[in-house]
Length: 269
Image (tube, rainbow, N blue to C red; front, side, top):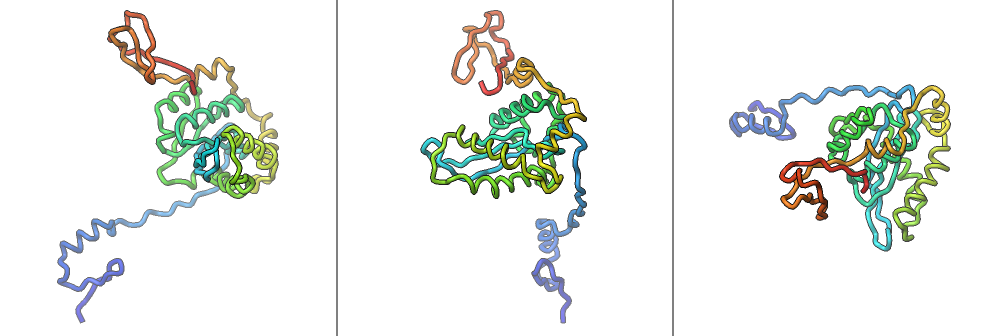
């Protein structure tokens, strides 16, 4: 019998195919690379509220919104210590505008976190979000690609939404987006935040309130909030002393003709 080598369920007899073909097959399929070492993931929890917020989007189901069946997305932010949902909103698009609105509302209500942890997708990697976090003094941290377990708490919350909220929503009804979000806010307030969480043996609301005396949450005034969350971009001033913004012309002093100017406006406007 001729010696043979078993390679990925293929039996290769000496001499057919050639050595070069075998090496190419091994290289193309990364068969000479050892499997990655499995790193044990230990349970982690920050000591106080506001130490760490985790954010993510979930793809929802199709509901009739203003007479048209549309796929919905929900952006959520969870406090790591208490499991309280500090921000959440259903939207028609998974985009930066939705994220910024939820993040801004969360900061307005619960103050500034120390760390804002999210995935490395395009929505969370914008220059604007980086600038906002820098102005707030919040550390923006991205997880490694395809590392969903590192965001396990928000992923577990999405499971609760799928199993606990969505089955309660009639699929044949017609909603406005605001009505759908009001229904979700009521479910959060009366069900999720008041039910004992398996990971803490406390309700998220009780755990959050119990730790308030131990921390000094940094809150912002309305003026500070608008200043920190403003949008900024550059435009070149045209020869007629105007700059275009979304097909609308704005007039600027003539001395800036030919120069680049920075334009600012509040988020969502």
